[in-house]
Length: 157
Image 1 (cartoon, rainbow, N blue to C red):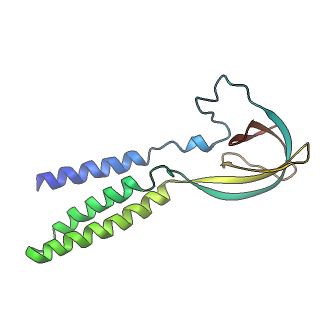
Image 2 (image 1 turned 45 degrees about the vertical axis):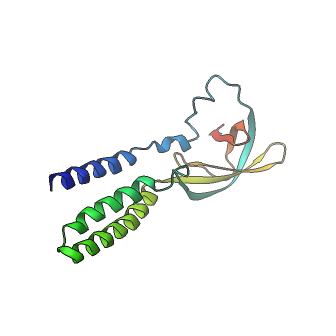
Image 3 (image 1 turned 180 degrees about the horizontal axis):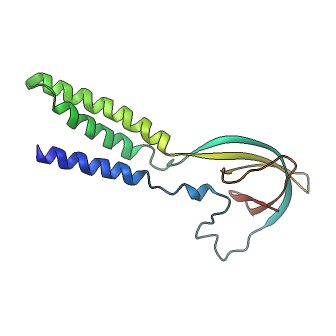
């Protein structure tokens, strides 16, 4: 019984730490360590449209902690029900339900509110940049595009 309690506490702690992931990496105000002390290209543009979107963080290891943690906690809770064959069945059902709930919970916890900014550069090119919604943008607003290619952020002019 003590072992199950300690296991449940450890899993809850692991899930809690997963919620501490840094969503600020999606902000236009945060630079990765590789961008520090590197020359960045600056292009001037005008915002043509703004649309609220969500960034689904954690694409590298989708829902691993939520799925495993939820399954383990569900299995532990299911094991507390009944005895014999009923207990085995309750453990399996609890683990399956916990896996599904844990996966969905991690999905929701890993979403970051963002904006899709469509801009028209001074040279006439239309671009879309998605970044964290940490400021208000308006169509017609003049902006700077900093970086290039897959490392591009929009900053106020």
